[in-house]
Amino acid sequence: MCQMLDHCTDAQKALGKVRSLLAPDGLLYVDILDLRGMLRVTGLLEACIKVDHPYYFTEHTARACLADAGLSVLGRSYNGTHIGFLCALGDHPQRTRATRKLDSARVLFDEIRVAQTTVPR
Image (cartoon, rainbow, N blue to C red; front, side):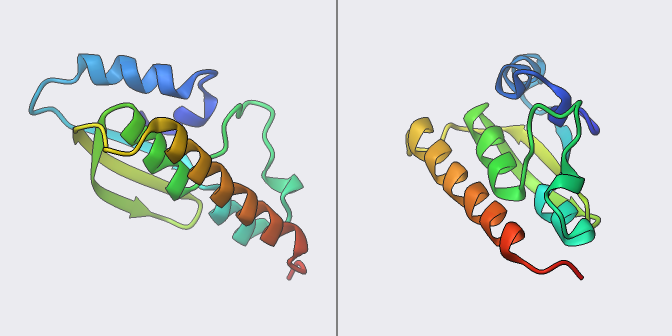
């Protein structure tokens, strides 16, 4: 799923469908446009907004989304603006989805707050 999860109108549903098709020993590669990386490159939140992106992920929020779909991250690659995740079938974590989503939302809003108060280079 290269450079597509950000474009899905229901990222969780898309990951759930892919998980249901994954063989027990199968692997899945997913990459996302990293909002934090884009903020580092552009310095402006407005420059990161894309009309065809209903979702904006950071490493933290992408990992939470993958975990919610029952996928386990085996490895990660990072190139500055994109993060790739190598995934396999995994167990759902013990924490509730609602708690993880709230944690992810807090982290995202903290990152946006920092970006808005940081002086551009």
